[in-house]
Image (cartoon, rainbow, N blue to C red):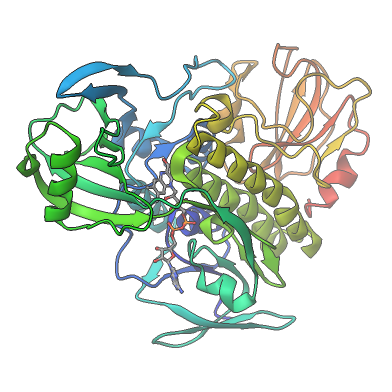
Length: 465
Ligand SMILES: Cc1cc2nc3c(=O)[nH]c(=O)nc-3n(C[C@H](O)[C@H](O)[C@H](O)COP(=O)(O)OP(=O)(O)OC[C@H]3O[C@@H](n4cnc5c(N)ncnc54)[C@H](O)[C@@H]3O)c2cc1C
């Protein structure tokens, strides 16, 4: 085999997976059809759970430095500021959840940061490599490219976005619906004469034209312009086309827009791949689920798909875990994606506010076959839940979890002897963890919980430990 894992697509999913595999010493190749990384801002909201994932992947400081909080919305009417609009329900940082609101970083910048981290770990992206064919047998996968030599790998991951070629080559269908038949234009623009303290919202006027919103992109001099168009029309993505929209829907002089740096249009759909796996090939990110961007879930869910799959591929390829561990990827991620689709559609239709659910901190795997709760009287934190941050005997838990290992958290009870790859942290009873033993998976979820260490060794055997 040329490599252990072939990752198709260098979007947020492929890059995050590349990082996770590289830090586990798994040989992986990320191939990308384009000649460079994606240049647009589209997935600009990084949710608190993804901030935690980024902390573990070693990019949090760069992500923090590159972005900023979302500005407060400002509704404009007839050229006047008509009132503020709070887009997100407020949330307070706490010891167990250090990140609160979404953090704004344009997607192109996030991808640059992920790529730099991948390269720092010795990985790389092969650009100009478009996958056009894929076959597999019991031992591996063989990918054909539009140009260049084929690549063989033990596993492949389709991280090639909503129009996934790999998904089509595998014959996996998408089931879903159109969320909004009206096309939406999204563009990164330079504008003079508009302040950067607000997300400027211009509600639809009496002329029947749709809504316009212009958001300053943190860490840049650009704004993200979003405009909804009537059904059946095709938005004009040129500078002149954007001048017309700005002239018709705002008080701004059209020429205030001086540059269009990137523009695209889309019609929101909510659809889920019928399967997330076919033999040795896995679907992740937008290749597995597409939805309205309204809830700011896509990039986040995609990165978290990669985070779920990375350690399992690593455990099977280098850690001696049984191949059946990989079955839990679809088992765990498909229900999460299905719920996320419903949430995004609901936010799009104005039925749900952006708040607790969109922050993604409550997601977990309680019903997974990989989850074992053995305590006789479980407390609020159960096996399957996200392992919260906190402090135990002077050690910050997220510091203890950071890295590709498992961690046993022993709270108010003695930890049993553990195989060497499992790290340990212990301390007196505390509020979030209460009391007990909590085995935290490499992706930061409690896999197993017990009053004593009975059954812990057998559980670890499933992960090859
Ligand atoms: C307007 C808008 C706003 C959004 N806002 C948010 C937000 O606030 N928060 C959020 O979480 N998400 C948001 N999203 C969604 C987010 O952009 C996507 O979910 C995210 O990009 C998915 O990442 P991905 O890596 O799975 O796919 P992509 O980013 O689509 O990357 C796929 C990559 O695969 C490459 N590729 C495709 N075919 C092949 C092939 N055959 N061979 C090799 N390479 C291939 C592509 O060139 C591309 O680089 C938004 C989306 C839009 C459109």
